[in-house]
Amino acid sequence: MEGDAAVGAAAGGHGAEREAAALSARDVRILEFERQWWTYPGAKDQAVRELFDLTPTRYYQVLNALIDTPEALAQDPVLVKRLRRMRSTRQRARSARRLGAQP
Image (cartoon, rainbow, N blue to C red):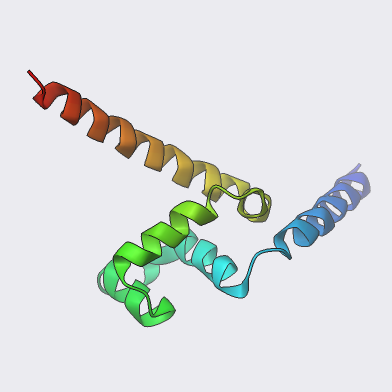
C-alpha cells in the first residue's frame, strides 16, 4: 500500500511539475515568498522591494494576476486557494463598506 501511495505521489508530482513549468522563475519565487513571507525580517513591503525590485502596488498586481492562472493553481493549490479566498473576503468587505456609505 505504501508503494502505491509513493507511485501516485510521484505521478502527481510529475504532472504538477509539467503544469508549473509554464510559470516563470519570478512567478514561482512569488508563490514561494507568499508561502513564507512572515519569516523575512522587517515589513513585507520592504522584502518585496528587495527580493523582486517591485513596488508593493505592482507586486500585488502581479500576484493577483498570477493566482488567477491554472499554472499557479497546479504549482501550489493550497496557497493559491487561500490567497483567492483572502482576496475575495477583502473585495466583499470593500463592497459592503461602499454600499453602507450610500444613502
